[in-house]
Structures are given as structure tokens and as C-alpha cells.
Length: 325
Ligand code: BTN
Image 1 (tube, helix red, strand yellow):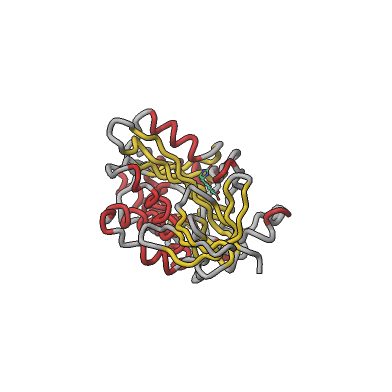
Image 2 (tube, rainbow, N blue to C red):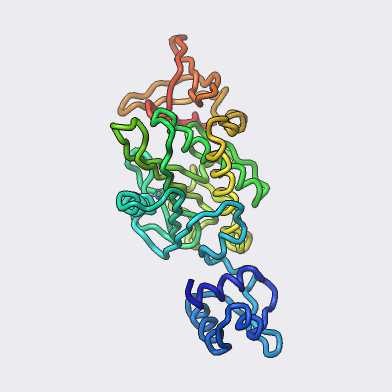
């Protein structure tokens, strides 16, 4: 870690409190001048740091610049996190890193995406500093057939973390959209490379996009009725994105480490906002109305079609649309 990053780590760990230049220079074994230079560099990067003679430096509690330091201090798991200002798509870039050998557990976070991608080739709206956009690289050693677990457990992790930080109730729309009050707040895109010899995945990339607060100019027209945000404005969101991100990662890796027990499934089923609702199954160009009846431990959904026939559907076969009330 360079001096700037070490100073940032200390400031993050004392966020809202003053820490003297002397203490910083002692703890990091560098000169006071080096500390001062690092502080200036951080200020240039947009960090709000107060400096008071005889008291030292204080990182504003509302500072919400995502960094490995700001996230790691809340993390229970040890995770390698990279944060970049802007990227085409965290999924695309992390897949490239995976192909070059990046290790299991690598997390790539971006403050904005220029070509954020959703499921079914859709675009994912990813403006600067108003959302969380990140991808997790996994090298699973379980059969590829079990990989739905990655997406569904990620949805539970997001829903629980949102509740932790915002006290808003979060539900899951099968398969992997997280909803608050009937509007989508998070989408998940899982992509993978299959190894035909081992019948396992070479790697999987779980990409998570969360709307944190509305951009200054408001949500785009086409999203206003269907999408929402975790926080109502930037002020309420201030200082919370790192803690939200850390909670998601901790829940996710708890479930991952506990994989054979699938401890999250009950929570997934309980959070379903689909069961008992009229839905529309979308399979390419074909659309069929149905009633969602129940979900099983494999997260398959049982539906009754209009002609009375009942069937189980699996993720990937179809997508669904909730009937508008
Ligand atoms: C969907 O709603 O259809 C899925 C959206 C997934 C968006 C996330 S944001 C981080 C990662 N990078 C992407 O390009 N997509 C995922």
C-alpha cells in the first residue's frame, strides 16, 4: 500500500474523529511532510478532510467515496476489492481479469459504468455516485448445475443488507431482482465460463447493480414507474454505500461458504413477491399468463396456466413480469 492509501485507511478507521499528523506519521512510520502530502492528494481526489492545528485531520462522516479502505473496515470476510472511477461494465472487465487468472473472491467496484449490462441484453442505467455497481469473481468447485445458487443467494444477500442499512423491506422477484414497494431497486447478472472436462464452472462473475439514490436530474422517464432507490435522496444516502456494500459481501460469502447446506433458501422463499400473484411468463417472443403457486428448495417456481395446467419452471427458461395492480 502506498502512503496515500495508508493514510486513507487510518482516516477511514477514525472517520468523524480527529487524528493528529504526529500520530499518523508515527503509526505509518513516515515523515509528517509525507502525511501532509498524502492528505493533499486525498483532498484533490475529492475527500472532505478538515484540518485543525493541534488537533489534526478528520474525514467527514458524510464522506461517501467508495474505496477498498472504506468498504474493508466494515467487512468480516477478507476480500480483495478494487475500486475504479469509471468502467464499461464491471462484469465485462472482471471476466477479462478472470480469463487472465484473477483469484476467487476478487471484487471489482465502479463509481459509474458507461455500458452497464442487464439480463436479456438490456442496458443497466449506471450513473455516477448514485448506485452501487460491482462484480464478484468466483471459482466454484461444485457442479455447474448448482450455479443458480450464486444468483439467488446474491439476491438474498442484497435484500438483507438493504434492510440493515435503510430499514426498508426488500422482496425478491423471481429469479433475481430485488424490489422495494413493488419497484425494482437491484438487478443481478451472473455470467460464467463452463469447463466441459470437469463439468464445473471455470469461473462465474456475479454482477450486482443497486440504485442508491436518484440522480440530480431524476430517474430517466422510462424507469420512473418501475424502478426505485434505496434512499430517497443523496443526503439520506451519505456515508452508507460502503457499509451496504460490506454487508452484501459478508452475507454473500457466508452463504457461499455454507453452500451445501443452502441456508439461504428459506429466506429466499419467504422474500418472494411473486408467489400468489398473477404473472406473465416471457419466453422469447411468447408470452403466457399464469398464477404463481409456490417455490421449491431449488428455487423453481410452480405456476398454473390459464388452461388449468400446472408446471414447474426453472430460472433461465423464462423471465416473468408481475401483473400491474
Ligand atoms: C438486470 O437487472 O437485468 C441485471 C442488472 C445487473 C447490473 C450489474 S451492475 C454491475 C454489473 N455490471 C454490469 O454490466 N451489470 C452488472
